[in-house]
Image (cartoon, rainbow, N blue to C red; front, side):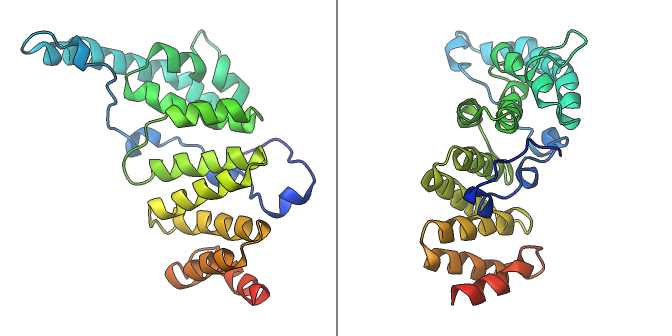
Amino acid sequence: MALRKKKSNKQDEVLIDLTEVTGKAEDFFERYQKQILIGVTALVVIVGGYLTYRNLIIKPKQTEVTEQMAQAEWQFGRDSFALALANPGAGFPGFSDIVKKYSGTSGGNAALYYAGVCCLNLGQFDAAISYLEDFSASGKLTPAMKYGTLGDAYAEKGNFDKALGFYKKAANEESNEVIAPYYLKKVALLSEKQGKPGDAKSAWSKIKNDYPTAPEAGDAGKYLIRLQ
């Protein structure tokens, strides 16, 4: 995934290429299918009202938002983040408009994550944080995705303490052999930069012992030697 050119400064020693975090998320709906229904309780005014509302309003709306998101997802997959966010073309809405129009649907919720990633890659870090904080993550992987991307946004803002907190949450959220060691590496690098060699050593040791076949394990040995 093509990303904006990173600033050449000491932060480059810590911040890892964001492409490892954001990915293309093209299989997002296969992993995240739980519908988020906001404010439904207030609409249930008679017995059976919820079922009527769900079948007549929510299901058609969810079908509609899935169709409406297709063009924005296509632009997202092409790394055209500005277009995906605001004007994907062919008369379809961007993720920022989908968030507003389809609030309360799983598609609208997914658009929050997409919009956050778009803003992150466009250098709009405060907007990215706002979208990602509103994103309701559930399941095994999406919480880690949310926390890790928030970590990147705060790291880009230079708020390394918050970034480190989110990287730790991402690493501890799911013991996936891809997700966990990737964020543990970020925890290790950022901890060392923050003057916390003990935390850095602990993170590298966890990678080496718990995820020996992960790509990050190849770096663990040399960093542990340096930290000695």
